[in-house]
Image 1 (cartoon, rainbow, N blue to C red):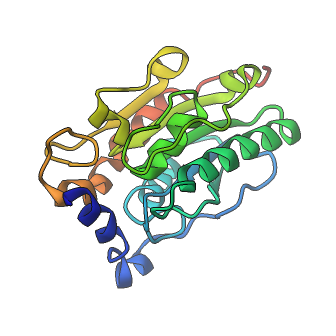
Image 2: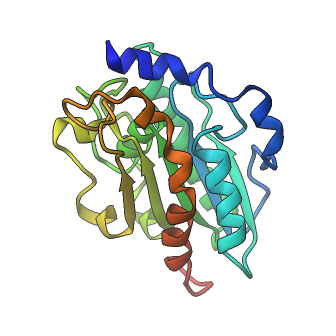
Length: 219
């Protein structure tokens, strides 16, 4: 019940506050240095996501200097339907594949909040099946494109309530925030408000990503 309240509360967040944020571009501009691919949370308003995507993108623009950024809002329902996360998983992977083909030197920062974290988990090969608003993996970023993913930024990640986390290839380039008491990512958590407070982690996430944005043009 707490989890459903958490997810439903996302639909009420935002309102007039949306106007105070600088709106990022929702679709990727061809061949920028970095494409920020953001999967919003269940019912989350905003361009990339009012709680996480928009503030993280704004923070990235300030932290990453000397490189051009674009953004892409993962196209999926972000609702409570059984196929929602799977649709996001498919769209994210398709986007990365098409962008990599069009822009060989472009790199990616993947951002996922709540159900959006499930979308990202699946896309990097960590199944969210069994997690709240999770799904089995339907697509993964091809191994040949894996080096192009500069960092993975996760917030309120539901698989953590199952005792899982990002392991393997992407582990060292992933930062995964779970607020104390957040019932979506903490087993037994009871603080619904904790799930709505990840805007406070935007700067820390951007700093982590900025530290990983050093590469040569080749590859």
